[in-house]
Length: 376
Image (tube, rainbow, N blue to C red; front, top):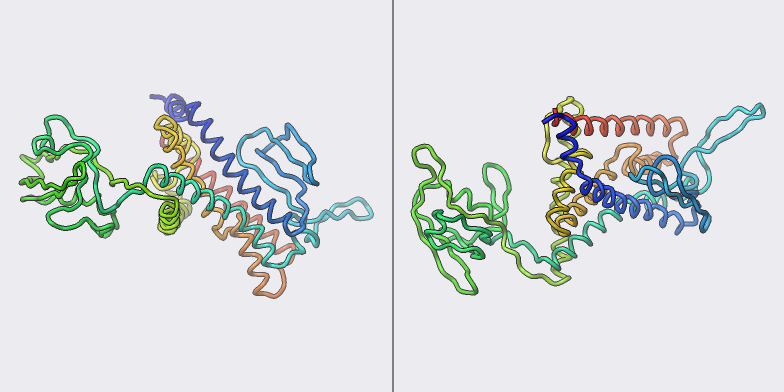
């Protein structure tokens, strides 16, 4: 298959439409939070754009020019006092200086509130979507494995295992929520793979239609060099949950995601600095994202909600990375000013922001190039 055929197979119309919709909503709410916190503190917001590039529609409302731009990717707000002020000399020459009004006149906490509002909005949206998902679909029980399928003529069918059976214990031991396997933390229900890697007798304690039963069998992982399969598909058991339990699980899931996301970004930065273009399943570019969204769209609405959760969490955490040009970098500059007891000079802040923007641009280029390179 040629490069263009592979690319067109990945960028399906359905995937493109849903990707743009999910990212547009996430970006709109992100920028709306910046807008709301600025206006709440009496700071003028000059413009609010949905999309980037040439403006195709504009309307002035409540002192802000609301824009619809041509490229349906992202968006922005122009908050008064955040960009440098233009100064015209007597001879018509133009220079710039640090703004003294609007955002620039806010106290440090006020500035941080405006900057932090965008990532916080994406984080809250992800938690809301998770709560909705857990309330509607149930909460995964990591200490119970539900059999989702049984292959015909398999060892599992011979043993009498059925779809819907829930494995509650293995070899007389309750399944833990998590455990360490080869130095990695895995959820308890995934331990079934490791148990079946050990030869000898095994016992599954099952629940079937509210009744308890057990299945005991002798197991040989391989015969004549061929790996043996039990013949079941399985995943975590799902238990119903109310809104309170769903919300608590959403908070726990978000907290557990933080180190995973940080490791993923750290790995990305390491690959970027060493120009390592090998593929990484933890971070994907726009083409890979569109491909994932396209598959989710065919799987159903809840799969799309899962993608929206991941994208909002990624957007929140990425924007909080203390790189100048991102919200986290701007917050860092505010904190530096507090520690110095005076803000950075105009030239210092501009040099830092230019370097930060350049780094982010190069990083994005690296991600896109790596994303495209897998089709060659």
